[in-house]
Image (tube, rainbow, N blue to C red; front, top):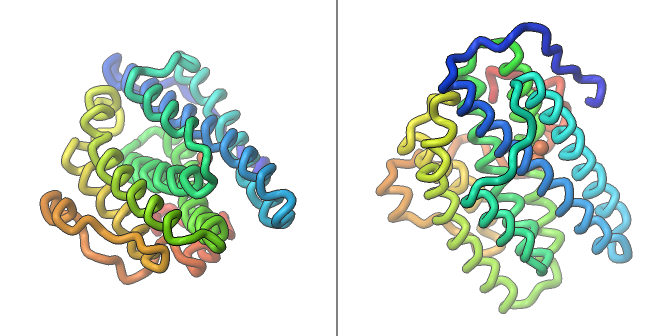
Length: 263
Ligand SMILES: [Fe+2]
Ligand SMILES: [Fe+2]
């Protein structure tokens, strides 16, 4: 997909307020790619001896995040703002994530970040009008949709030989991240809403819905939906077509077949 070009020809068509929010939005995306790249390559090294083929997959996956980071660097220049230092909430989140040492904690955290990332991109893609934004968000939505089932596979591989204590820790971390990420729109809305137009409750509900679908898929690892939270937010019920299983990975793997309408 490295031949994909952003084709940034036209000048920006945004109000001053939406422009500043767009810079926040795509800076957050840049940081997510940067962190995804680093963690994937670290995991690849740790997997090398145990499973070289899986290590290679992790490297390629990290390379794809690196390519996204390059595209976003170019895109931020077109936006006229470049890469900014991280804000307080973003810095705290990535510091926590960066401090995770156990492979299962890293993969679960990454998987849940990918889920909220692809959710935000998909919702935003439906609203933007200018072709330059559509193009950038199509690439991100398309690839992140594939990264979710890919990371589900990584997590199962990491958990394969783990004992009861490790499963218990995974469940606890899953709950903690679920609540934290569903609350994230409280911090992100004041910064990005003037660009993406997504309301606070709408985004919290969408995060809860998609994180819940992921929990369903990972029932075999003991993960489950926090029912009261989903009821309180009015999250959607289980989808008819799974989004995080092997069939989803196969559906999303041929990137040319992933149509914007299906996203
Ligand atoms: Fe990415
Ligand atoms: Fe990703």
